Structures are given as structure tokens and as C-alpha cells.
Amino acid sequence: MRDIIKHRAVVSDDWTVLRLAEGDTAETIVLPAGKVIVPLSVWQTRRDELADRAELGVWLASSERAEAIKDDLARFTVIAVDFPKFADGRGYSTAYNLRARMGYEGELRAIGDVLRDQLFYMSRVGFDAFATREDRNIHDALKGLTDFSESYQTSLDQKTPLFRRAHRPVATSS
Image (cartoon, rainbow, N blue to C red):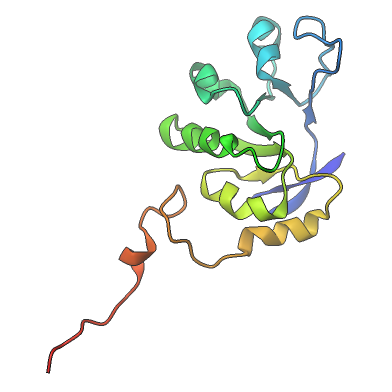
């Protein structure tokens, strides 16, 4: 088991993220027992086989849209969004859409090339769990959630922009 950040704490992760290796297909890959987060293609291909699992997760590649699972959201304990590289920000929109537009309330996990510098911003759009890169210190990454005390822009975590929250004394003319 590896550690992840979940609800602003480092915890052991008992989920398996299933990835297709070279030569694997959604139809033929062996599905492990227990808690598993499957790629969208596996869910779409083997839905009937997976539907009876009590705890199931799905992960979306950066090129896949959240709308592909909008009718199945209640089936997933975890939805993970893959960040294939640090510079690919499409997952932020996916997370925001899952939370704000589709109302997903379960665990929303960032996986892939997830680094400390991203965590604060990822949490603002709805991620509440982070599987950071294994070559980085997860306890250092946890500190990334508190790098900033204020945010200027609105998002899921703050509906009012800073200029509307800041108290400014009214100038009086003499």
C-alpha cells in the first residue's frame, strides 16, 4: 500500500489504480479483487461485470470528458482524474465540472504527475484526495495545500472574489 493525501491528511491507500499495459485491452485485462479504480474504457466495456461491486472507482484520462460518466456518478466511490504531465491542466476543468455542474460528492482524486505546487489549486476546483508522484516526499507535498492564505479568484472553495471580501475604509473629502 502507498500513502496518499486525503482530506488534508496523509493516509494509507487501499485502492488499486488499474492501468492498461502494452498489449492489454479493456476486454481482456484481469480485474483485481477488492477496491479498484478502473480506466473509463474498462468501465464502458465491462460495465455489467463491474456493476455489482460495492466499492468501485473510475479514472478519466486528461482527454476524456466527465460527461461520459454523468449518468453513473452514484456508482463510483472514487473518481480519479489523471494528470499525465505537470503542464497538462485539463484535469482542473474535469474536476470543476464533476463538482459544480454534475454534483458529484464522492472522493475526487488527482493521480499521475501530481506535485506539491498543484495541490492548492487542485483543492480549489474540488479535489479532496491526491496521489502524488512516488519520487516526491508526500509530507512535503501536504504543505502545498496551505501555501496561500487567500485567493483572488472565485472557485468552488470561495464564491466571492477578494476585492469583494476586503474591507476598505471609505475615503472622505475634507
